[in-house]
Length: 326
Image (cartoon, rainbow, N blue to C red; front, side, top):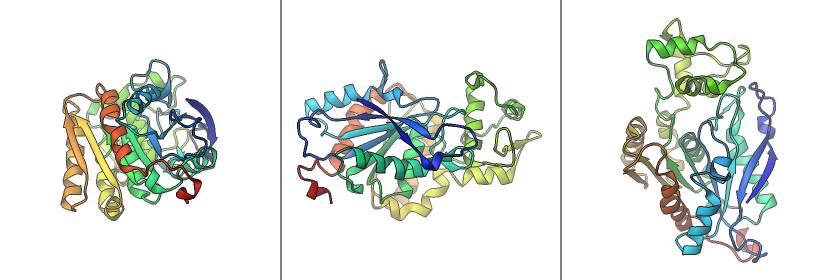
């Protein structure tokens, strides 16, 4: 495992004040050092809200990518590949892998700058057919959002329990939540003490309703005086994959797509079932599975038994010659 720092020009000047220099964890397969002329496909794995790259690469991580990848490659159930996870933690708990003045342009950072850095510094097969994008929860949203918009970069997508895909996701919808959200007007010293439902709503507003003229939070609130603000709600809805998918159907036809969710993850299961229905209505090939589990308890198993075999099957195979990657 390597942990690097990659500068994101697209993240410079973000109004949250997050550093544009991002930690990135990289897994290199067992044969990488011993086969100096071999090139490898790359899986970009995006982490969830309030997590970091160390959620997959740190000591004690439940879904410890190096251990799982070594085991599956050794068992012959997965092929060798490079796996990359950037740290997308921000002062509001997560970037939502979106683009705007407040958070910075994470879409460009992931799809362009990070991919370019990895291709320049590692022996990759620098083609879309050899790149996959996956993620869990907020990372699943990022994989869906960025993936459907960039088939020229990523040819295969695996979406695990994606959050934030319907218009009402992360929107305060009770009088108590609305009041708590409206009361959040100054960024506290310890943002982690804010209730989870408010944190996700704040991060969503920062990602999808940015406003450079509205310090110190730099976003427009979807709630005012206990009422939903239609114009702000519409801006946020425009960033929801269920609202975006019809625009990108032809892109999705070019990609291999799989997604899954635990049956106890009720709201997300309903949203992904709707995503499944939309793809099916357009005859877009994909696989969708509802398994026994909640939002996070089966992710290590799913990554080992589903995600890695999926990309092993669909990404361009390892190349023994640099000419094969041109």
